[in-house]
Image 1 (cartoon, rainbow, N blue to C red):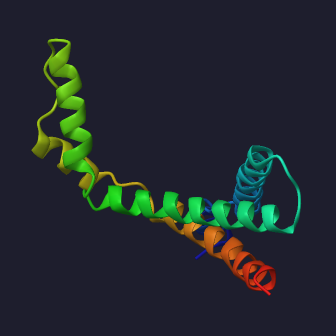
Image 2 (cartoon, rainbow, N blue to C red):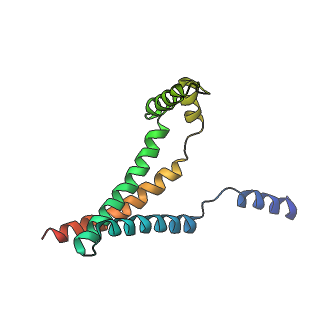
Image 3 (cartoon, one colour):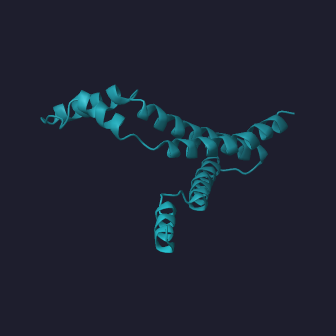
Length: 140
């Protein structure tokens, strides 16, 4: 193998899709901060119990989003989503573009990447730990 072929192989290896973990970290940090700040504004107070509640709800919402994405990938929500779409289209006199079988097959063939599920679940679990500690402290 000459030097040129080795460089080409190195480029192929380096061009594999990588996750930019810092960008994802800051996205989840921003999303969590927006949720946390919104929940504090909704409560309209800032004390230890309000912060504990906002952190708990933020963690549970992130876990819920991850769980919903997982359930969607497993086609558990398909009857509800396709049925609602079909009913709404029927009310305005249209027919859905794809039948139920095709709809479920399209989800099975092109699911939401597992990385997004892990991203939300890990973020929720990271926030859940201090939330539980704060709940224990607040209950004393």
